[in-house]
Image 1 (cartoon, rainbow, N blue to C red):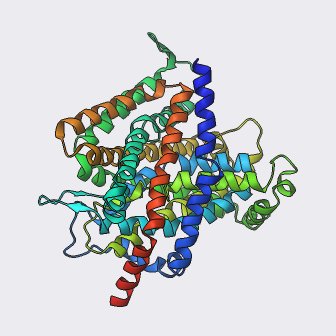
Image 2 (tube, helix red, strand yellow):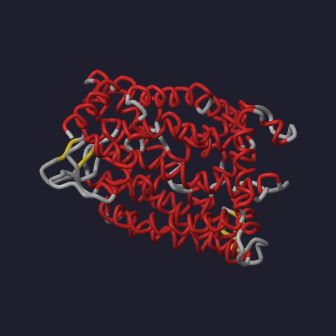
Image 3 (tube, rainbow, N blue to C red):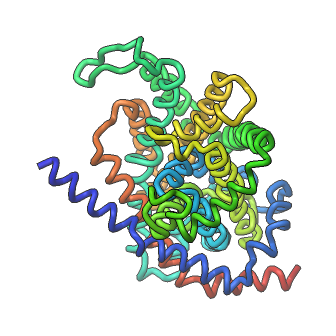
Length: 467
């Protein structure tokens, strides 16, 4: 019975995350790029300026920078370290090229999401802001589409509690800690009814649960305050390591770039036939790119709606930088590190071990230091992703049930419990179901993006004509 359920879920997952969904998201980004006149290129300097420039007299709960960091806390995670490695090992170096293409068009989508989040959000007398796809579907497309808004919110709650927000991130943290401190399982402990686990996994789950609980109890303001410290700090450390790696192997960068370009259109010429075709490179690159920066999924505008601003376009520009930072900077540097060190070709390596090999091989520092630094980055990136997705899923729940303190507190406690048991969850069906909910979020959101594209263009023209 369970095997049949698992097979059904795997089939559904392949359909949801198949070419139709990726085509829908890419087509939306392409359409917006054309209608907005390459805004992601022309207005990128201005958007980077707006990140650090607070707006006077803005309404909301946190600054635009804090809202961006909250969104980045959910996107900068295992996808940047593990996802890139998985894409390249499965699709060859050309997958990185298609990841960049997805990110370029995704910037226009992210801009539109941020704009609509501010335009259609609600702010009560106490300054509490609530917005995102559920509100720009209901208020932008009309009451008759409220069922679609509720569908998005339901999927958002499921994704946060059952998958990308908890189990996948916690497993990533516990695996990284275990691989560094006790890779040979010398310190095992038997947990009744669950199995044998390394003591490092048990300790990591307890500490992580306590840290998550301490932050979540404080709500959005505490999540934002933690995110705007941890995210930039860890991103700078990770970027410093990758920059050092690239500088130490600078002579290999041109050939690595050529492998990326050539592999994008003729993977067999680069891999010697080890990787299938251009379709494999495209599918792996685009899918992992979307997973990493979440452009089109509709998660980031939930955080953008809390920003202290009165200008939808301004927040759209700030939101757009999230995809630029996440994929075009961080994922690109990770990908080049993996390609120029040859880590993607080493047999027997998968996931984070590929990136670890690249760092150990390419950095002029002891391997124990580079492995520890990468583990630390992965742990903190995944930790902030847990925080960001709690915020997203709580806001979805608030839309469905109203601002009921008892309901939200119960959900928060369940979320903390999911974090605690995450390292011991090995049921594949749970992971597959979470992946399906993650993909299904994008459908209502992209329907709204297409339907409201005229509003996006009109707001953009109005803002820049006024300036």
